[in-house]
Amino acid sequence: MQENYLSASDALDKLKSGNLVYVKSKTSRGDISLQKRLYTSENGQRPYAVIIACSDSRVIPESIFSAGIGELFVVRVAGNVIDNHQLGSIEYAINNLGCRLVVVLGHTQCGAVGAAMRQNQGYIKFITDEIKLAIGEEVDPFKASILNIRRSVARIKASIKDVDGVQITGAIYHTDSGLVDFGVIK
Image 1 (cartoon, helix red, strand yellow):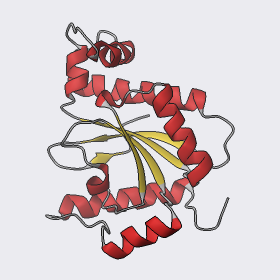
Image 2: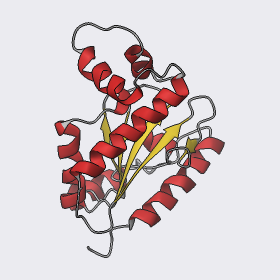
Image 3: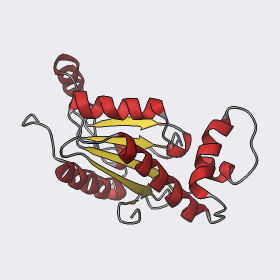
Image 4: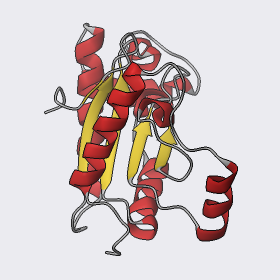
């Protein structure tokens, strides 16, 4: 592993401290400057973490973690579900970009989780059927979101194996307070 890559533990500490900055901020703190854009354009990206996040417009990983250009490798899909496309993106970030931390970031008030508790038609069923496998008959939206995060973490762990120093974890973003809780997913 190259020197400029963060360990999973250091990346997790950076996410946690960035979230504390975000919770206290009124504006974004990540570096989106012309200099940063030029640097990453010329030198490539070195994200310190992979974030699997819901597509919900209230969930903005770069803002939530006070991160700027080139810092997070974000994969977004409604309900933060995992299929082969997401797994391929995660593998790419680990094998080609040196990421050592993968976080499945669910959130409170998740519309996709709520939709999974109802009958659905059309393409949304690809998402809600996957969530339904995670939540079973759970009717509490918060508990269902936790179960959904746990399933996605388990799917990633089952598929991404034998990579030194890679940590895969889950967290839940509270849409009301802005706080990310890494401790609730066990």
